[in-house]
Length: 83
Length: 379
Image 1 (tube, chains in turn yellow, red):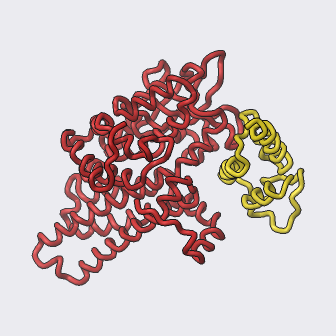
Image 2 (cartoon, helix red, strand yellow):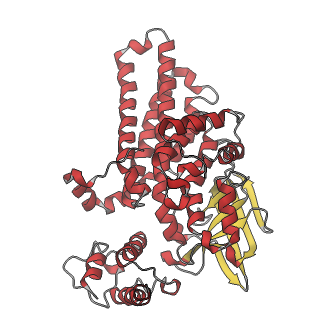
Image 3 (spheres, rainbow over the protein chains, first blue to last red):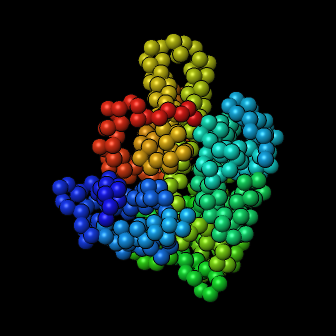
């Protein structure tokens, strides 16, 4: 996970505190609720200039930091790389 | 594209258009006249709903509607302007059906109801039960919606439906349903408030529509709605300012018409308190309008919405009181108070919205410490 992603993600995790953000970190446990997930989606798409594909719009994608990063990095490779 | 008058010129044009509409509670007649004159499109930046509302013109349009004193008609227009048209515009790539609904709603030859609130879930949209499933080249919609503005006279219904189980925000989509499709049943809500708004309850019994009636991308229904709810809250605030101004104006005329009342200190102070509150609401709306209209800032929308309900409640209660016994006249200030309760309920009840404000406490406290972060833009 790159720093830009973790810095952005942290803004939406009010319960993170001093806990380390790993690939397996459950985002819900760190305070990511449904409305915050929506704001996070828009923030990611604005920051990285990508649109997450329909197949990645699932609760699994938003379950952990690693899952979300994989979706973002894949979208970045295919969309930004193709631009 | 119609010409784009600004400020007072636009407000005068809207008033001129509305002058030709009979003063009866008929939301479709007003909508048709405004659409035909091209002023609905002018409520958006560059005349394009996908670019977001122009707060100044939207405020002028809602104020002109409010001057007619037909709250149901204003409510019906407010929902379409703030939410329906932008959602249709963003989903116009879905196919010709959505494009037609957008074009005809914008030119006033049709109306589209926003069917979001579910029979089962109330204001918790993640719990809604109305579902949409794909069958071949069709979508099948099943469920029920309650308290839907424009329900009984709409040409189309823009339905928020569940595409798979679970509360996650990615489980919902928008579906465009023709109101005359087999399986759609709309009945008026049991209320004598909001005359002309067409508020009602709608059932969808295995309603089949072509697959291109999916509006926008699948799984982005709730996200799209969340993005536009802030705009609906801005529209509500702009309308609330106009409505409170109308109520205060009527109260002052009533007080000055009764010998000596307007000269009593106690009366003047009560009136002035209401006047101050409305100016505070207007100032808040002005300071947040840009963040909401351009950035769809949900926190700004929540902040504004949390202020609207209590302000309207207090101001209209004071106005009704200042009318004395005359306040109980049919269609008078106490009826206005009852209808204005919608400002504390529609678009999220005040208590829920305050919870959203509390969630953003750190950010909002930081803004108070930094005036430069508040970008001003007058509505």
